[in-house]
Every structure is written in structure tokens, then in C-alpha cells.
Image 1 (cartoon, rainbow, N blue to C red):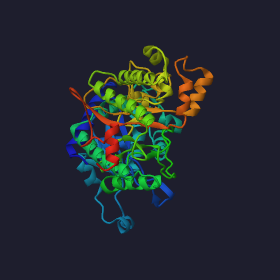
Image 2: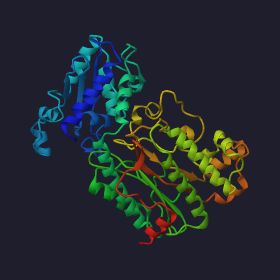
Image 3: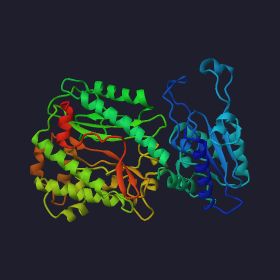
Image 4: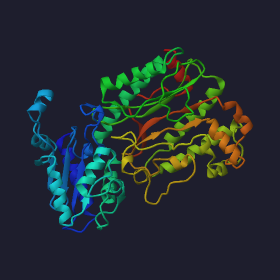
Length: 481
């Protein structure tokens, strides 16, 4: 955990923000639910416990079956959980009292876990608003429905609560939490850099083990061993694939063959649960072919160009579109596309080659806060999501401010099924040279990703050392130079 004062201050800021959304005297209460353990096969054999990120942000208690209520009218805070009994102590050893744990994060009142139901019932009977966040776990969905009287569907719906508009997840609370978590504090940036160090080490481990004749699974095992030895584990399921044209390929059952491109998209979560997320694409035999180097160089140029544009006041939607234009410019030089660049960008032609967005927010979640609503997190009120392939998948479009942590991850993929669909439907509006594309059907894909902190005067990449990324540096690193 951070120092107690960090959590006390965050909750005070939250109360102030929430107080702006409802009339004084009936602002209501905020209910936070931590996660419960999730059985893997049977009740006592659980997945590795991962706490809810918003709970961690405001309370920091990394233990299952905790809840808390903040009264927005009188400022009273209560943590709810159960003290262990002798049967628990036999298996778990002595445990701190809930009261002591609550006090460690600046909360003076505590009560048994089920007592939260009485507090919620009392608030509802009095007509007080009950604010809660949309849940991402099934246990919390069911628990919130039970506590609030909502249907299971309504629990995950987000709408205004202070106006008396019915029981559902609170739009006011979601907006307040996003406004706080999207700008990282210095203590958080330090943790993100630590997660970056672990993530970079796992990528170095991968690069040193990508050799023809080795099973992909063996490489993944060594990578993930780094994260378990130095942190909580991976921040998302590792993507390591010689079929980079499949964006999220989690199969690792292939023998590494020479001449392929290996996309490795992987990140670490440190012990404070902050994430890293890096992608590199490696030539499996240690050297790029001429065709591979040409496409790789375009993606590298796009990565560098995106980074050069990142600064406060610039929208990440603008950065995405600028990168799309640069990508098309360099693909045009290879005669893969033809025509006016601005017209191609407007027509969404870049989506054929990069059907995902340029990046997303990062922090306590690798896709930070997307459980609260992707558009609410990633888009300013005056922005609307595009329907175009690629641009429509942009998860972070906001105008950048210092403290944002985002990914910079351009890619080029040659997806035969998508190419054939566009060709049949004439979706490219005549800009794509399909004859030239035929020789790329077995190419695969390339993605290059760094994590970036927006600073007051520009940006910097997170983690202690940037992973090798230029074609020459990648080849040199794979040869052991």
C-alpha cells in the first residue's frame, strides 16, 4: 500500500467532486465493493486473487471480501469485513483485525461484512442516493443486485443517480473516479516505471529465447516466470505468435520456424498492481528479410512519429489520424495503396492495415478503467467514436494532459480474410492495389508498442530502458551484440 495519507486525500477529493453533483443534505452514500476470491475448480481452489482496481485506488486493502461506504453528507467512512475465526487461523495463521486494517488506510469505523446491507437498506428507505460503480466480476454483480434491489442487468447500466433516476451504476461516481484515476500521481508513476522494468526484463528474456526449433510455450513460460519472480504476474494473457495478423493470438503451441515474424505483446503487473504493456516483433531467425524490414521500418517510423506528437493539449485522436496518414504515405511508396493521402485517411483506408486504435490508457489496469465504460474513459464529452474500422477501435481519443499514461502501438497486418472482404465489397474506394497485396498474404503482422507518460512539456516513455526497436538494434540484440 501507499502511505495512509494518499488514500485519505483521494477519498476527500472524491467527496468534494461528488458533492458538486447533488443538493446539500441529500447527497447520498457511495458503496465500494472489493473483489471476492473466485474458485477455479472447486470452492477452496481459487484463482490467484486480484483486487478490484478502484477499490485499490481509494482503500488500498489487498484482501478479499471487503466493502466500504462513504457518506457524502457527513463524510463518515466505514470499512466492512469479517475478522477471522479459529478455523481460519489454523489454515492462514494469525491475521490483523479488520479495525486495524481499516485504520491503516485512515478509516476509523469498521463493521462485519454483512452489516453493509443494513446501511444500504437504511439509505434506500430514507430516499438517499446510493452510488456504486459498474461491476466487472460476477460475484460483485450478484452482490450489488442483492444490496440495492437492482436487476442484474441494471447493476451494470450507468446513469444519473443523484436526480432520482432509478437504481443503477452511478454516472456521477464513474465520472468522478475517471477524472481522478486518469491523471497519475507521482507515487503511481513510480510504480508504473517499476512495472515497466519487469515488463522489459520479460521481453529481454523472450528475445534471448526466440530461436528456431524452440516451442513457443517454452518462451512464454520463461517470460512469465520473470513476472512471478518480481511482481504479481502478467498484466494480461501473453500474446506470442508467429501469426501476428491475428491480433490477440494466445495459442503458444507452435514450434518456432526460421523466416517468420514473432509478435510478442506482453506486460507485467507489479506487486502494487500497476501495469506495463510492451510489444516487439522479432525475426525468428535473427535477421529480417528485405520485405519484412520494409514493413517493419514503416511501423517503427509510425511509433516514433506518434511519440513526437504526444504533448499536453493534443488529442490522441489527432495523433492516431496523423499516424494513419504517415502509414499510408509509406505504404504508397511501396505501391500497396494509391491516391491522395488526405482522401485515403478520410475514407478509413488505414483500417485495412491497422484495424485497431493507436493506444489506450494504462495504470492499475492494463486497459485502465475500461470496466467503467470505454467511451467515458477514453473520449471527451465533445468527441464521438467513429464507425470506421481502426479509428472506431481507438480506446483513447481524449485531449492529453500531464499525468496521462497511454500506449503508443501502431501496427501493420495483412489479414487475408479482411483483404478479400474489402476487395469483394469495394470498401477501399479504389485506393488499394490488390495485385500488389497478393504477395503479402503470408506475411503476418507487425506491432511495436511503448508505454508513454504525458509530461508538462511533452512526453517520456516509461520503464528504465527502452527495448531495442530499430531493425538494426533488434538484429544486434538477437545476435547477442
